[in-house]
Length: 373
Picture 1: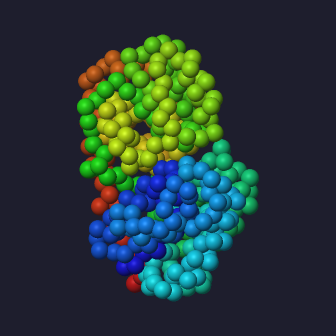
Picture 2 (picture 1 turned 90 degrees about the vertical axis):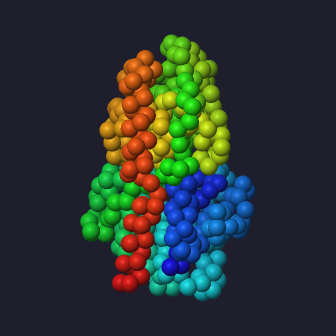
Picture 3 (picture 1 turned 30 degrees about the horizontal axis):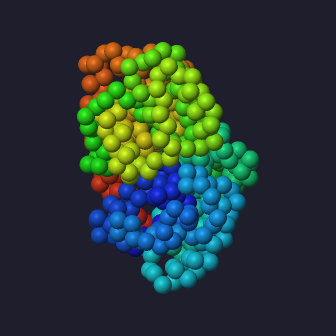
């Protein structure tokens, strides 16, 4: 099959969805399929390259930041991508369009379907669904439900990485339940592996209020714990989080935005004893899978898609409760057998449930049904 990928995020730019999209594309290539990606350009990325064999075309759209994008950038991307695709698609014979994010990439997929007759499967990632993200897109999503329904209606299937997101999508009236398919995100369990563990707590993600970094810093601030807190990420809360961390009795180290394919990030995960993601809203977090595969003892929230990701191999607590988080961290630090057992369970769960080859086969099965049918 020849597969056209439409997405607003692709390495080296984007958040958690970005590496997920690239890893699944690598699986498609390994199974003998051809893949071409059309995505947003950024000054830190080459306009056209073969990334691990994947044909990547980055379209100019004035994107300013590598870690997030905005409505006007999405509009510019749609406009420029249509001009590119009008020339690119006739020179190729794509069997299927696999699209990430209902908005804005889904707008392009619907247009491609109408103009060229190429069927599409679309994966939602969270913030593209109304009601998921309280930090951003609230005003935008007042206008998008009708648009999202039209994108879903023309798609063959809509893939959700979590049951939580499936439920949000089902609240959009008129979408048949049988169109929504749950396929979890995957993880490269050969790349992310446990290393020699050190007294490190690691957390990673966009520095947004809903991600809960402020509560994590508070949980370690009031006493000198025998551990360092390391935070990887960038975003609008960086300044306030740094100011908060300056008062902490436990060392807090900021690494800024770090690629999840960098040796630095891989080493941090391999060495971290504890990984925390205490977000109030999360779809199917790739950083949780990275932490499980790397043998970290994981503490996460008991809401949204987090419990689905960790199962019984992690500690799930209510978001926003820094006192409870402090107690769970100290329990892991003080009870070594408990901590080691949790690390082992996390690694086993990652290998058993989320290894990429099996996840890719589930997608290819959808594509084959679409092409044949």
